[in-house]
Length: 160
Image (cartoon, rainbow, N blue to C red; front, side):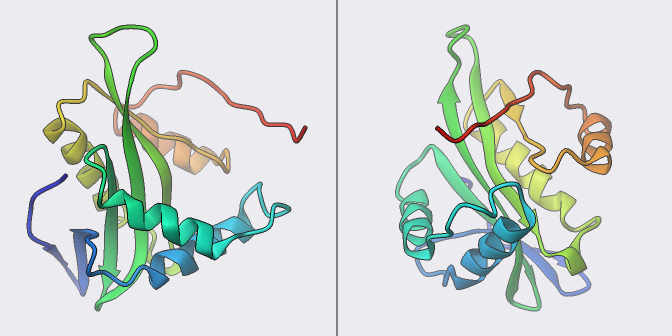
């Protein structure tokens, strides 16, 4: 778990790690919003299922939910997990499962979520951090490259 107090970023923004006391309704609303924007919009969104998965995050040391708040309201989050590598016992990988920031709050403060994710990964003795780009946006790809990430694979999905 990432152990630090909520950090004020300025201009009304704060970043913190979610805990059991947090109301995750704001995260659920953002996931629902992202769901409609993304490639999985044709799959029914199940808020109860997602709420249960989010609630388990704080109970498992290998998962984290980092929140971006604006004037106390959740406007973004990064949800991540740690897993071993199937290639080498020397690799321990932190993987971003879901990173989303409300459109009106994207920009420099949303990048603090990525920085907090990397800090958490280092604190968990991870050797690598893995991020994804579901929307295949060139802007996101440029951001990742600027932050030192390199493309390692491209995923495809098919309903069966």
